[in-house]
Length: 501
Image (cartoon, rainbow, N blue to C red; front, side):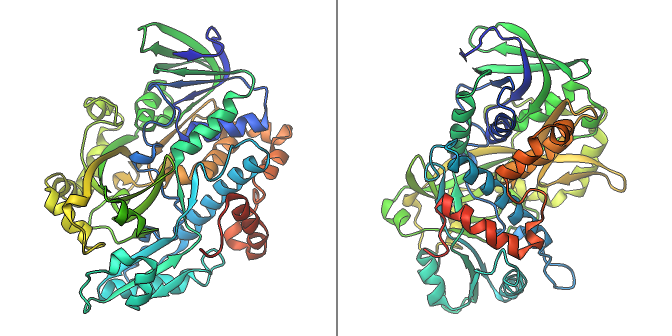
């Protein structure tokens, strides 16, 4: 199924994949230069059906308000909060673009994709309580986190999250932090609103059920893209000046096919996920928040356990997990041959070295795969002691492909997070990796624009327009309390985020 400009075989920009990353880049480009021609190719039949879908993990507005893996504890016992400040600033940049687009009438409505949802960290035991207190002490001194609350008092924690405390051993030492300004973001719904804006512009062509099969360099700032219509089997080629591969797990094999030297040496390690989904409306109604705990030893960041309020299709949901698993697929709707097919001569050594260095992760995944439903319920009861099995059902989440890359000292490393690969001439870029991914789509695309559209930023009005779209562009919010105080409250007001609930 194709819509608009079916016979158009040449574009300024081709976006591969119709998820939050392509939607964000496409929207920013259309604001910066409305006459750009853009072709979007998506192998599935709808927008945001893989990693951007709310049921496939993307939902938390990752701002380091509650995610403990962004504040690791050093060997000397101190807490490193530098990544938390960076992640929080990145999410603030995303919020600025959404607020601008709402003010300009380019997005439909904030409640359609964003719900204010408190973010909590919750820990059990003396050692973990000591860690959380240290984390709170360092974060609460910073202007990003000045509204954070801390409690060891069980009655206070029960007010914040009653399910977490009911039925808990009174002798158990616990602690929690609370941020009222946390959010739940439905990135699938946001992608739809962004693409609605793009679709309403001139020179835009959407192609669903179309799979990009190959990429061939055709000269300076020119690529030929091989596309298969999955409905008819027809193969055709389109030409473009710039390609963004925002296809989730498909990004790695496509960037390998491009042949660019910057893509050599990269591999991918897929991690699948599952949720326990609450089916009891009374239980769902009694919990409002994202309660994050500490990950098990060897667990990937996406497996940090959390009791998670979501708003999906306008309905409040309650999830717990995710439980990690292993599949050789790079996408939920992918092939079991994805992993073996991605192994090349230029990346096999980094992949082997990374594998040898991550034996605890392998053991963790094996343990997760072997879990029974009762095992999963036992994990849930650490956060909701009174949970009963009849109120919960298993829901399959999405696939994540963690980046494996060359390393001078270790040969190869498994990298948690995202990686943007860009050709030297800026004519192609691809996004690899996972969390915090969707929440940091805007800062990721800012960096991509600076790398791939540097001339336009310098020689046209793009830079001034970018500063209008994102008021803190060119400044560092984490180091500027005054600027933060000027920008963030206005953005929050536009998005419907209040200081207190």
